[in-house]
Image (cartoon, rainbow, N blue to C red; front, top):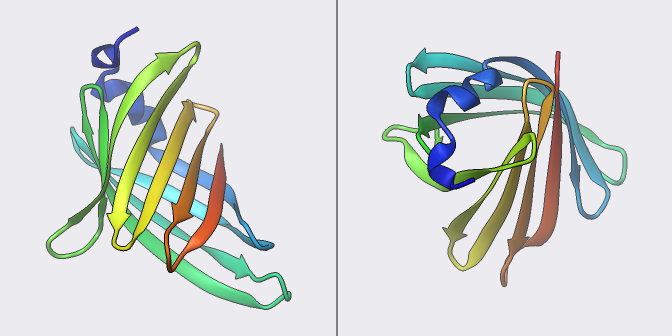
Length: 146
C-alpha cells in the first residue's frame, strides 16, 4: 500500500505509557518509562525518564522530551525546545500488520539514519545509526505497553 494510506489515527495508539530498553553499541544500556500525551488532534508530546548504565557499570539518570506532529502518511519528530526544532521527518507505509518508515537527521558533520517499526498497540522499535567523523554508534530502543 502507498504511504498516503497511513492516517493520523493510525498513530494515536501511541498515546499512553510505555516501558523501554535501549541498547547502545559499545555495551551501554538505557531502561525507563515513556509517555505519549495527546496535546491536540495532530500533536503528541513525548517524555521519557530512565537510567543509563555504562559498560563499566556506572549508572546515570536521564530524561528527554520530543514533540510528534502527526500527519497523513507519517509524522515529524521535533526537539521539545523553544522554538521546536526538527529532528526527523518520517514517511510511513504499511508492511503487513506493522507501520514502518525511516528518518534522517544531519547533525553536521554527523548523520542520524533511523528506522521506525510500529506494531501498535503492543509495541514499537526505533533504531538509529549514527555516523560521521565525531560519532559512530547504533542505538536500538524497544518499547512495550505498560
